[in-house]
Image 1 (cartoon, rainbow, N blue to C red):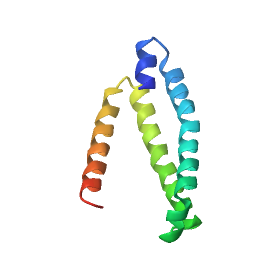
Image 2: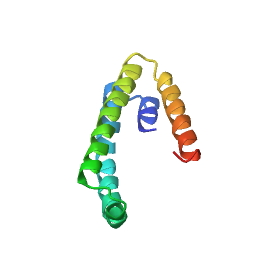
Image 3: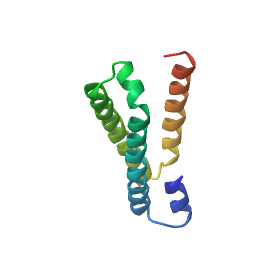
Length: 102
């Protein structure tokens, strides 16, 4: 949304991308910290330790890196609408997995 609004306001693509990314970093780190704080007891009870958490963070970083590369390519190639297809596809797959109990 921040990239879309920035583009509609006439902000250059590169600046919109960087602003959106930098804006998300504190929110993501804060959400991670809050979740770990709130779920610490539950995670300990089900046997999720530091190793599993770090592997999850690492996988998330790798997937995020490729998603951002795709977004950057779509944005600079003036095919930003293609990123919407990626978001819809990924959202549909994750929703289906979630509803199936996976």
